[in-house]
Length: 153
Image (cartoon, one colour):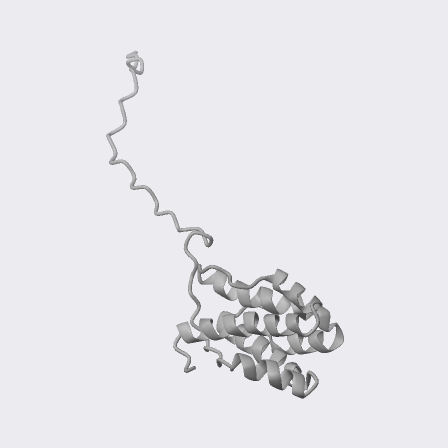
């Protein structure tokens, strides 16, 4: 009988080319993706403030709906016009903080400094003066953002 030769040492594997490293996708925080939704309409800061007072806040109900709707249409995020309207009517004080927060987030999603935040709502605790400061800050920030995206002033 012939015996088979004992198995020898295993042959070394053929050299393979090193695999190319897989590309790493940037994290959302590192590279914010600009959105390209419908740009909102800038409104005169003093117009919003004065008409809001003259109409005893009725214009501001319309403003809340339109602003919330524009933010949602542009970014695809946020509460949207209907929820802004309902919250404004039912628990208006909440919107003192939510509105500037959403406007600030609009800037944040574009990788820009947030000119307003939820803290801006505290201005409304100062009678009358705070109202004007809040409108100037929030509507002013909105106007600058929309104009930076090509909206007509």
